[in-house]
Length: 162
Image (cartoon, rainbow, N blue to C red; front, side):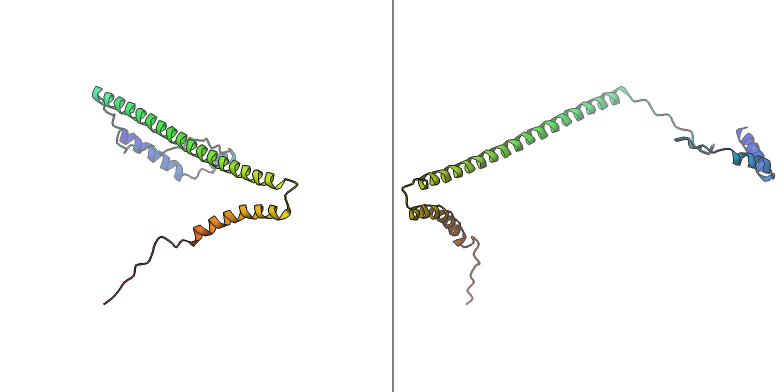
């Protein structure tokens, strides 16, 4: 019965469209068209298969899902703790490096102050002051040059052919 009524309805719509009805079209044109967000008209198709109802889950399936959810939460918490521990370890390493660098800078500053204290005596002649100043600079240059003088660790092999 539905098919017949649907056919009749479509035939009526087709006849209405075939008739030249200009009065109705003009009235429709004067009315403002308002679009409603989210309201999309979909054509009605009776050819669609009816939606199949889902089977209800069994008690074992529900228990297994709850167990999986708990395991997922536990693993997420463990990953978060690992990330926090790694962040703390990285922060501690950076802090240790910073402290070591600050100590090295402070030692350098103390050495420079000691040199300046030796120089600051009014009785010392200028020649000795120059010797002391060049000595500290020469030591650092010497250390750099010694490090540069060593050949690279990789030595090319020598081949002897007979």
